[in-house]
Image 1 (cartoon, rainbow, N blue to C red):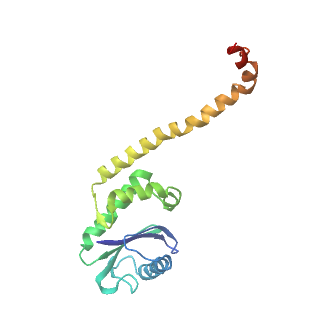
Image 2 (image 1 turned 90 degrees about the vertical axis):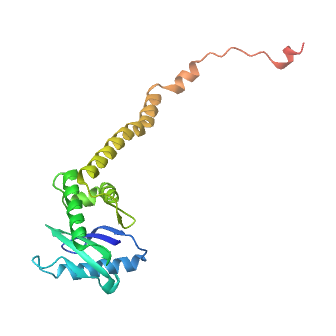
Image 3 (image 1 turned 120 degrees about the vertical axis):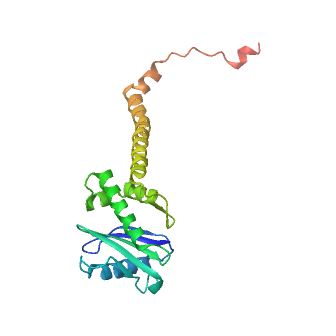
Length: 190
């Protein structure tokens, strides 16, 4: 099972953190720092698998990572997961991000966090792999983008309605309405 997915830059700044186990906030920060220290010290030409740190679970957990340009993609998994399968999953995740953002970069992860989480949730949910077909994930992402665009048209409608009413000078029109005199109640009873 996948326990955590971490993406951080070369300086250790987290750009995405997704924990599938409960950790307190300070423990999460410690896990991120420890993971960065373990992964960043390694050369690019060594194996991409590590034994987990003391906070992550020690011997039973593995850190599987890839370093792309300025970003580290790290998956913390238990011993039941295949290391090569997770490396392939990281590759699918990065290629999917690349297709959805057209040459993904660190700024895309910062400014489009909701989209990145959507893509990740199509890939992994609750620590279990859901989908590995990149074309399916991209199709779901594009459907979501179309849905958001159509909903943005609806959300703008109340603003347009308010501005239309404001432009109508409604208060003056209400004053101009001629209301006939109503008979009094006393005249009705006579």
